[in-house]
Image 1 (cartoon, chains in turn cyan, yellow):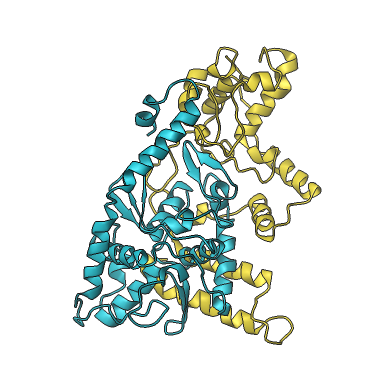
Image 2 (image 1 turned 90 degrees about the vertical axis):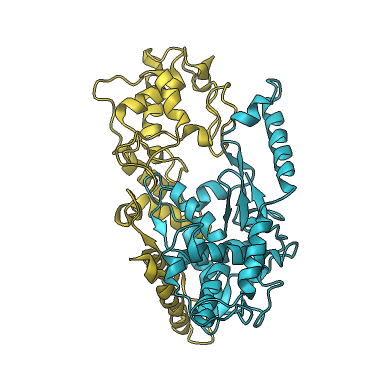
Length: 259
Length: 226
């Protein structure tokens, strides 16, 4: 993985040079983020009449009223009275697609990354999230279920398991740690603007895909040697609340670009 | 459970929150469930959220033993385990260590380096019969030559020197040789809440693989000690 970067590094001060090279590589990537293509697709999907009910999503309430998209991302996950659930951006989009357009949630929940209705949710989430770019995270914690979700997310974060005893906290519990050369944000507090929770959805150069937070968590759990969490399952939403509340004050860089 | 049920049952977990809140201790407008109630809800959430995939089964992956349970609780509460509890858990883990049947602690350091480099195995995208890696470089500096290393664990470069071992076959080195084997076999025998996997205890690595990593760390010819 690091071969391309390390070749450029001189032996003297190799570590520092490698880190600098990676920073330059990342900076280079910022020009022309392919995430823009997903944003365009998402905006189109938001406005287009689709599904058995042949309706658009323009009446979807993402937390700040029907049709409001600016600012909603930095306040999600949050409690929704109509479903009596705490929901993240993706599970809320699935609800709107179901109620407004008549699209079966199973098409997303049982779907595959990058395909069909799940790919549509990825595009929608990218566009909606991008409307809050630069805004600071400030998740509501006024509803009892939002506070309970935070506590459940905290328990999920510290849960060791799988064959390797890994928890989220194993890699994301301390400042300034790395796996190989990959920096790891500490997610028990605010890791900074555009880092950790404030960086997803992001375009991943290494596999040429747009990854949402659901996708990011899914692959974290895979690498943790855990079983697979269901799409928008309670633990993924609770983890979103825990990380999102902790990230209070961090500016969103979404859609970001990653290696 | 099937993934299709996940979205539907999300409601039941969080609806439970409201009930638990009503049953709060002082009967007043308490909306915060107790820590024990939250623990029970978290367990239910876990059961509803995960499903078997590939070689990873929910029943095995999420079966926490006494060590993990105690360490998880300590992390959630923010109160570290007391020394006596730590020692008791470490003693339990120590009992699980299988020492080399042939008394040979050091294998081949070259093979150990390959195992240390590999992070493969035991994910839901891995095959059951694939050789597992040790994941060592993900968290540790080991040789000077490999600059792509993680920092979650301490640097192991010049490990033998740091542990005072110049000849691993000498009698005075045996305690440290045994410690190195034991630490890889079951890290929790020496630090109950260590971040390090229990490579032998959990069947991630074979006895031969453990011996090869011990050699990587302690063999005077290994690049770790040059």
